Figure: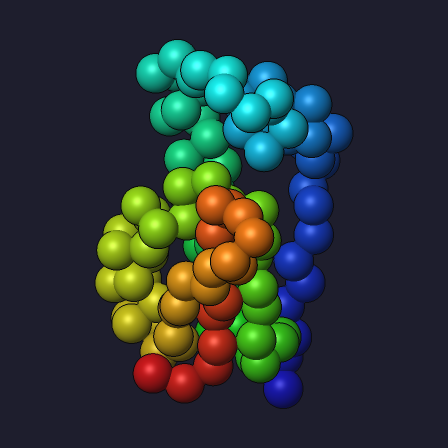
Length: 107
């Protein structure tokens, strides 16, 4: 069985210092359109990578947490998940408005 390695990649430090990281912003601060777009793209990339990891057999389940736009991107990644024969679900905490997306093996 061939495994897959999912890593931070070369630009992980840049992503961590990204000013569009909405989870690191003070409550009530506004995002401009560019920051919002970059945050959505970053969160979609994280969920797509989780789908690839689970689909490859590298992990039976992955939870991607701290997603500000998780509920909004779920419909877009659901078709990818279906093609890869994995399941995606949004998870909410009663104490936070930040979403988590769980990716599980099996369609």
